[in-house]
Image (cartoon, rainbow, N blue to C red; front, side, top):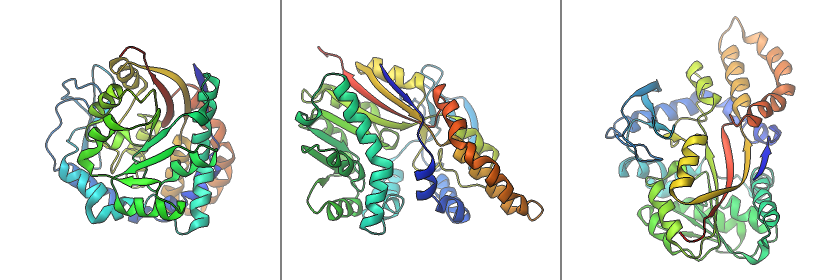
Length: 349
């Protein structure tokens, strides 16, 4: 098992400065999306293991959440319906969702690719090499490619046989414009599972994708049945301390468990998923933004109160230098808000 812990927070703080400055607008958008989600049919089975669920653990922004008693997965209490997914991902060519992942210009796109996605690509390539593979001879498909950042990052490492697949027309157009060639292909939302079973790729990446799918189990089953696919590289958000910081600060933009993040993985639900779909954990990188969320939550609440506004700068000076060390302590205990995993299908399945 290859394991890595921790990641510097500097690039994230630089790229996500609007999380601090646009708190009210972003929180209002999340409340609207939460209200839409809560109008959908009630969920009765776990997104990760399909076990019956019914007991509410807590509520946030008007949405109930349930913890699966079998696998430990955190489920939103409502279905990711066709109407909800269309509203989030594809209505108006996906322009609303794309705003969170687009770049103002080529330099901004390059910086985001370099600072956020290239480290993910390098971890994949280095892990494959450590496992005895020649990464340059393998083919790669990035499902849910978005604006093409991870495709661009893979290409920057020297990989050639890389394709992306995405449901948002706006993001596909941006990705191909930035690449200067047609590297990302568009497909319909309801074609995702069928596409997974037909991909001609040795390595399939799902970077921040499983948590957005209506049918993550069906997609993994399709990948398992695809004889071309040997490895799956995932990045998923986790049920971590960030959730409790968001519960404690309801007037602060909810970065982690809100919007299109209707459910969160746990190490136990990931382990259940690996057992069910015959996947072996080969490499893992645990890192998160929990302490950044805590730092941001307290900073915004201090600034919102006239009596404490002057102390915000003191808090900023006190905590900011300690963020990475505090976060790595959580990461090393596998309590981080995110994990990257390289998984390999067991032979003979």
